[in-house]
Length: 158
Image (tube, rainbow, N blue to C red; front, side, top):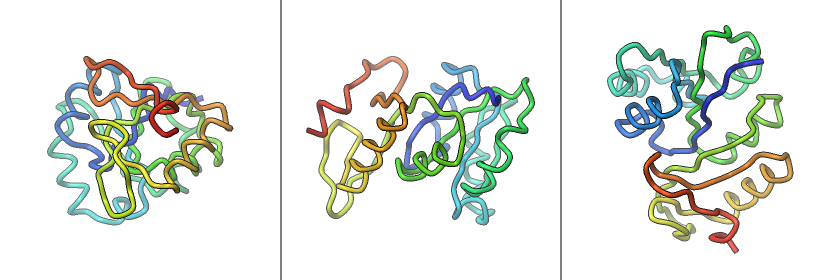
């Protein structure tokens, strides 16, 4: 079974906050971005590699490739999965990736979304995805950085 030490939804993917605070907090030595666009976009990969801390590896796989190979991860790999959307996490869990808990860190405002916390904006599709994660037994919490208090997403999306 893969050693998944953190699963985070952050539409910025790997950036300073994830690369420093969350990597250190979780003890991750591998940042995995399951994203169909990023997996084929060397420019985006290079930008994220610049933000990754020294000594921490990065991988950029399609969602399907992540599902197909996550169980081949070595025991020494402490994996932080950084997903762009809750829908991506649903696909991973439904595909057999053993995610038990999801940290929601940042979901930008865009047309049709409403703000539910300082850094999280959702629309009906996001809420459906969060509810599906709940059905699948995945714990979901909002927390921008490890030093802030966790927020109860279910109270905020009522």
